[in-house]
Image 1 (cartoon, rainbow, N blue to C red):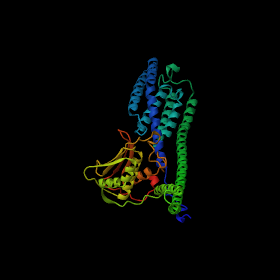
Image 2 (tube, one colour):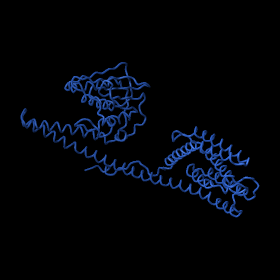
Image 3 (tube, rainbow, N blue to C red):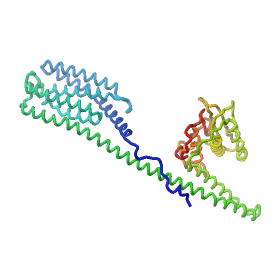
Image 4 (spheres, rainbow, N blue to C red):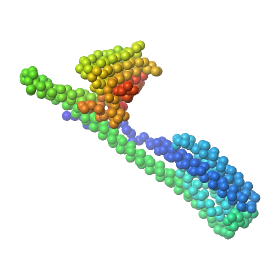
Length: 464
């Protein structure tokens, strides 16, 4: 029967953590991308716009418009080049939002004023600027400034057209004169309508931005709920499976003991004794798998630091595997120079070295050599490398050897390397596995000069 404390386990995932920072960061990145694309698009279009201004200035008889359009053409090219040089190549690079919006507003109003004011065919672009500013910047003071400048400009252009004191205010290509033919009431009505439409366009942009933000908040909340539920379920399953594995060890020990008794009664060399020997070996293998699974499912216990000489530890592990290496026809060499003292939990570090050495012995062909090399780390600490002369890592599992359940052995559980790297990281070090230039694999364990300060229990699966 399962222990009561394992029936329901809850994780520390909190739903109350505010996701606004993450969402705002995403929105800022998207705004940077949008501004970058607008700036690059304006840079590409600037020659065409500048040439159009110069052509209009050449054909128009009004001196003030010629001067204004010539200056505007130079500004379009200059500002586009300046913005293009400052435009981000990467989405995280800073974007000149305020200068871009200010210059864009000034250029837009200049174009509208030089093409007829309230009678200009380009007047609707004022609404587009309000929407883009609201969606991309998210700064209320900047949006308020853009709308205020536009409203002042609209009524100023209406007053110029009504008073009729600017000769050639309407372009010659569009008919010429102080206005295009609309009456005073029409101009005033247009200004009043724009006075309502410009804030409405800004409000639409604000609503679009808030809608996007709300959608992202909902998506992130749903993701967090799913992750919390998954974490809770994973913890429950890990606890349950660990308890089941623990409960299976006792029946297996009984089966192994009974098999030994039956083999003794059957007599040595008999067929039943051979079969019972196979049964005992399979029970041993099942117990090894259960031990690995229990190590994987239980949290990592805190470290017990001691001063250890890494070379001596490597020689102890090599001596433990001398019989297994001789049985496989593989030589084990330990190359060590000066002393490499480290502070670590020797039991856990030995477990890591045993795991990688057994893998190297399993991968090495008869007549091969497994070399254990111990050196000092570049910043202190120690480095232990185990190199074999086997076939190397197969391509499908080359980048996944530390994932639970991934193994190249026919009877492997796929948990050994996962636990070994978890133990190395618990020390503040690292365990890597890669190919060797001369063939085979090299497993490298690095340990820091100072032991890890965080020795709180953590799940082995979560570390790996």
